[in-house]
Amino acid sequence: MANAPSAGLAAADPRVLALAAQVAESPEQDIPLLLLKLKGILNSASLGCEESKKIKQDIYDYDLTQYCMLVLRQDHSRLRGGWAIAAQLAEILSHCCVGPEVKGDPEEFYKKFLPSAIDNLLVLGRRLQARFIRALKDEEKQDFLRWFQTVTDAICWLFGGHIQLAACGKEKTLHSVLDELVYKLSSTTNPVIGNAATKLLLLVAKFCKQLVKLLTARYKGLKGLLSKQWTGKGFDRDLSQLLDLLYLEQSSGKGEMQRQHQAACIIQAMWRGFQTRKRLKKLPQAVTTLQRSFRAKRQQELQHLKKQKEDEALKLQMQLQRQRAMRLFHERQLALLEIIHASQVNKYMEEMEGKSALTIQRFWRGYRARRNFHQQKQSLKEYKAAVVIQRAACKFLEKRRRRRLLSPWKDPKGLTDEQRLALQQKVDDYIKLHPASQMSEEMSKELHMQAQEKLAQFLLRSRLDQRAAQRREALLAQVNTDVELLMSAPGLARTTEKDLDVFMSRSIPVATKARQSHNTMLKYTHWPWWKKLGDEFMEDDVVPDDALNAELGTIFIGGRKSF
Image (cartoon, rainbow, N blue to C red; front, top):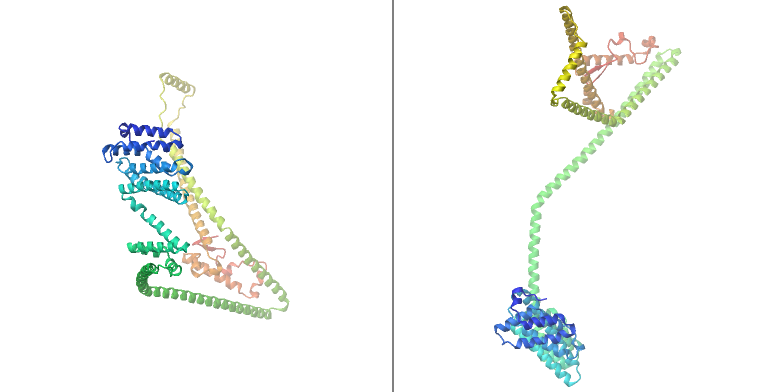
C-alpha cells in the first residue's frame, strides 16, 4: 500500500507503521477514529525539528494522508460526531502537508496532492457554513461555528506553508464570489442587500482595474441592471461611482476595439493591394495565353469550315462528273443504236445487259471479298502472331535439344577383371562365328568410287535443297509483306497516289509492259461492236493476243510478277 522505497521502510516510525497496518485491516466505519491517532503522533515531536519532518514524510509515504482526504469527502451527517471528527482530520491533514520532505515524486505532491487537499478543505468549510445557516438551536450553531473556525485555521495553515496554492484557487474563487454578488443584485429587491453588494463590487473595482475588465466582459447586462433596478434606493453615490467605472472601461474597450478595427482595415487594404498588383503582373501573360488559345480555336474553326467546303465542293464535282458520264454514256448508246442495223438491236441489247450484269456481279464479288478480308483481318493478325510464337517456341526447343546432345560425356563405370575377360571371350566367339570376307583391291577401289559418287550426289542435293529452302523463305517473307500491305491498305475512298505507288513494280521494263497491256485492254473494250463480231464465243475478259500483243494474265504486287 505504501509508496515509499524499501530503504525508507527500514527507518520508518513504528507508530506510523502500526497505524497504517490497522487502517488497512479495519472496516470503513472505523477508519476515521483510527486516523485521529495521528494527532498524538504529530504532537509527540516538536514543530520544525527533523523528527517531525520524518514523521510527516512517513505518514505521506504510507498513504495515511490519502485516507484523510477520502474521509473528508464523505457525508458526515449520518455519523454521530462526524463533523467534529472531520474538523480534527482537516487540522491533521493541514499539519501533515506542511513540512514533509518529499523525495519520491515531488511533482505529484505539489501539483496533484496539495490542490486536491485544499479543495477538500474548502468543500468541508462550505458544508459547515451551510449547516450553520440551517441550524435552529444555538448550541448547534456554536458547534458548527467552532468546527468551521477549525477548518478555516487549517486552510490558513496550509496556505501559509504553501503560498503557491493561492494562485491555484484565486481565479476560481474570485469568479464564484463575483457570481454570488451579481446574483444577489439580480434576484432580490432588498435595499440592504443591494447596498452591500454594490459597495463590495465598488471596492473590488477600485482595488484592481483588471477586475473592472472582468466585470464588463463577464457580465454584459450589469450596467443596465444597476441603472434600472437600483437607482433611487438610497445608495446612489456608490452606485454612480460603480457605473462610472464600468462606463469608463467600456469606452476604453470601445477605443481599443476601434483601434483594432482600424488596424484590421489597414491590413486588409495592404493585402488587397498586394493581390491586385500580383494579378496585374500576371495580366499580360494571361492575356497572351487567352489570345493564343482564341487564335488556335479560331484557326481550328477556319480549318474545319475550309475542309467542310472542300468536301462539299468535291461531292458536287463528283456528282457533276457522274451526271456528265451518264449523259455521255446515254449519248453513246443512242449513237450506237443509230448505227446498228435494226435486226441486230435486240442482240446488241442482250449483250449489253449481259455485260452490265457481269460488271455488277464483278463489283459485288469485289465488295464482298474486301468485306470478308476486313472481317478476317483480326483473325489473320492472330494467326500471324500464333505463327511467330510457334516459331520462337520451336527454336527454343531445338536449342534445348542441341544442348542435351552436346552435354558432357560421362565415363562409363569401370569394368572389373572378370567382366573384361568375359567380354573378351564373347568378342572372340563372335569373330570365330562370323569371319571377315576377303576383298580384292579392284573391288575396294570400285566401292570407294561408288561412295564418292553418292557423297557428291548428296552434297549437290543438299545444296539444291538449301537453295530451295532459301527461296521458300524468301517467298514466304514476300508473301507476308504482301499480306501486311493488303491489311494496312486504306479503303478506296481514302486511297491516294502515294498508296498506289506501293503496289507498283519498281522495275521500269515490267511497269512499262504492264502499262501497255492496260492501255491495249482499255482500247479493246472501247472498240465498236462491228470489230468484235467474230468474238461472240470468247469470254468477256479475254482479248486476242494479236490485238494486245501483251501478257494480260499478269498482275504486279509489291514489286514481283505473279502468274
